[in-house]
Length: 466
Image (cartoon, rainbow, N blue to C red; front, top):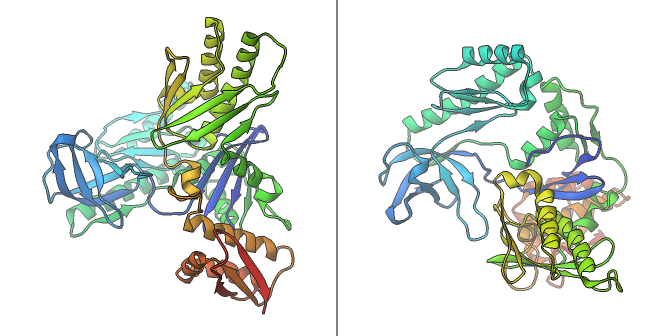
């Protein structure tokens, strides 16, 4: 998702624990939440080895370093494949839920202002650039830089860059490509040869480059982003460090909005509510009028509630990162005009996602409304909770929740030598995470004593002076 900067849009970055959480606020409402715990990123380049050919799927399995084998479709690789063959591949889709990693052999190396496609042999400038002289100037510069039939795609953010900055970007991307090609020529084991920017870093950088407001809670992340802006010759006026006794997400009421985004029921402004049931095969959404607009004729009431629901449904689908098939059961509308208004409201709310991410099926003969949305990673619920049994927090989610809560307590005067009692799972995870202990040590002024308490659950904890 491209995130730009307007006075109606801001990013809030929580980087006080082991994970980063980035909240996109539009018109004073949380509309997207990204959670980054490190690990593989889309567009990472790997040197892999073909482990199995699967003609029935028109694909091959490729062994990778540090992760499960990925799927490489035959039509995403130039030339034949055979078992044992070394290949350069790029992650085109991360694994999630029961889906494995998907790969491509057609490499595209992404930078802040440029994309390099080896062998594509073309130069592409942003369509928004209408100035003929400027286009000619950039084409001449990129043609001079172009080597080995590279494809070069210039991003809009680079239009006001100097020639030296564009040249430096090209050389950086080219060096990453050359590193990958050298690894292929000396192949002996699968390895990660080029680490791509995570989606969350792309979101942050594009927002900052567009002049969007960004508030950061976390010293290291603030310093990193200020250094990035300095390196690119950009002002850091739109970058603000959060200070105060409360954590940023608490101070801005984001924690409450996240909790609401995990609930199955969502109240509608003006009355009525929707119920969201996210299952394995699809997401079912039910529209309910409750007592909304009691006394009005049923058709007008149904249309009005459905139109309010349409906007909220799209908002919730984006915020919860729901993908796959979505089936809506709106209030029954007898008129074609009412159904057309509902369809238009859904399409308007999705806006630019209709270019490919969202496919509209429309109304069925039974009065249901269907659309599908491209899956882009795990849903918000799957990021936080275990998939089976009662809703238990995932170990990483529980650990980060504890670290954040403890840091918040230190901002309110708790310091010195303490005993930190946590669940057995969190205590076990902490024993293997020196980075988490360092955060707690910095917060308290000394390393806390970690105590495993089997009576505690999920992210519950207890602090005691020792």
